[in-house]
Amino acid sequence: MTNPLSFDELQTIFHQGIAHLPDYRKDSPNTRYTMQDAALGAFGIFFMQSPSFLEYQRQLQASKGRNNAQTLLSVQTIPCDNQIRTLLDPRAPHHFDPIFLEVFARLEPHHLCESFRVLRDQLLVALDGTTSFSSQAIHCPNCLTRQLSNGQTLYYHPAITPVVVCPKHAQVIALPPEYIMPQDGHDKQDGEQMAGKRWIRHHAHALAPHHVTVLGDDLYSKQPFCALALEKGFNFILVCKPDSHPKLYERIAFWQANDGIATCERRHWNGRFTETSMYRFLNDVSLLDGQEALSVTWCEITVVNAKTGEQLYHNSFMTNHRVTVENVAEVAQAGRGRWKIENENNNVLKTKGYHVAHNFGHGKQYLAAVMLSLNLIAFLFHTVLEWSDTKYTLLRQVLARRQTFFEDIRALTRYMVFDSWQHLIEFMIRGLEIESRLEPQPASKPDTS
Image (cartoon, rainbow, N blue to C red; front, side, top):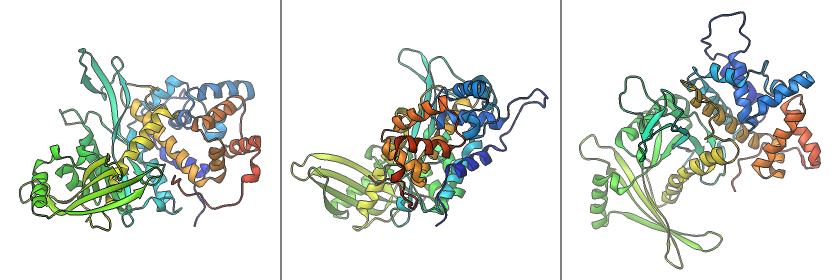
């Protein structure tokens, strides 16, 4: 196995990803800041989880002649906040997509995706929409709009934030987002389903060869989306509600009346009481009427308290995977895994220090989307470091609360200048007097707790 991904390697990927950002400024001898400095400066705010990070570094530069933006992130000259916004605003967020994809590609040789695989070597990628900004006053041409009951207009920026998930893992792997915004040549307001199709088209070449099963809610369980996913080499497990699929459920009712639905049960001790999971499934059922109808597999899961009969969970899914008595529990568990995108991704970004809903700058074109992409990259880098860097992993274990870890980093980088990221991490380890716990060991596997 090759050496695990280090901060230096991640930083190299980031620098390569921003090396050719388009610069629309006219050539001028007075140009002071590079596009790379603007991107690195904005990224530093998210990576350090410190909205004031750049201001602190300007103060250090004035007092000490150097700063952590330079030594840790290789920012040559720190732009002011308004200059960062001005420089990044015209750049479409897709320019940062290669960074996500390159990190993902590097995880495979290090076997860091191996334990995420289920259903005979499948990686589960959950799609779900989230809103990163909303306001009744601030807006740009790329905002979506919604009329409120009070007559006011709400302007907002939604996006799909896909992640690799696994039911048994607490972490997720961020993939390139897809922004829901007005599209050239379309009069109808953009929506999550259309953005999901764009994401499939844009990233199939890079991701489909890795054996990907797409997870999503009932919004995605439509024939055009499913057909596109199959055409591009993806599999799918999608929530399938009766109200959204009357023809499908007519056929299921027919087969139920004729004893054509396969069933099985599993019992499981959850640590407090025994759960009974009851499964029903049917292969090769038409999603719609007509010869062009897609043939799918339908499965249902109902979980009850084995002692009281209280229903704990119920859902149904449609998939292109063939379901058997042997794998129905794993298929249903994979379908339930789509909630990881909300619990382990969107909620972490909103409530655990990344401030994804904060307005870091709206701009007139793409700034809000670019800021979200940089925030997601910061989240991805910290996730990878927790798996692959033993010193970083030790610190996160000792400083168990995420907020404590970043509070310490914010305080240290406000008053001291470190030669490198490694220098900062080692300084924290020495300060906590935990060097003895650093035993040589292979890269850690993702947390399965």
